[in-house]
Amino acid sequence: VTMTAISTLLSIIMLPLNLVIYAKYSFEADVVHSLNWKSLFTALVIVIAAILLGLLTSAKVHSHRFNVIANNMGNLSGIALIVFSSLMSNSSEDAQLWERPWHFYVGVAFPCVAGLVIANVMTTMCQLKKPERVTVSIECCYQNVGIATSVALTMFEGDDLAVAMGAPLFY
Image 1 (cartoon, rainbow, N blue to C red):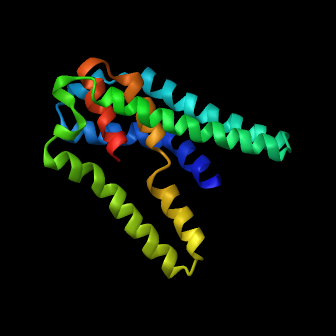
Image 2: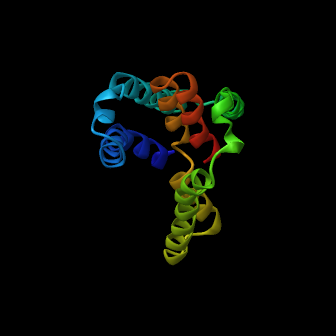
């Protein structure tokens, strides 16, 4: 939970910084100016508010039953996000997730696979127990997919939204 909270808080700075760097060097200069920064920060604030509310609630409510219910709601929300992302990423004829070029799959999968390998090597070198290794690997690779989905939902429309939703879904 701590690693997730810290990485999410850092995303307030790192996500816009990465967007500027990648957009500036990958596309024309106009792309940076045409980004919807208000939507980006709105998405980040919503995600961070949800995390803070969850931390506050878990600190104030000391009930095993509440923890089980909250965990189940989180799991259901995750499944709903996957279903919703699947529908949105395939909502355009030109943006079907399974009809993308090979470099899409390699480009999206590579950071995840590399992150898993690096996290496992480093946690093994630090002699962490296997459950701790798994936890660190998950935190390093998968936790901010929700932020990417939120940003895609708020920053894009139509065919661009379908294209943008494919990356976090495949990741």
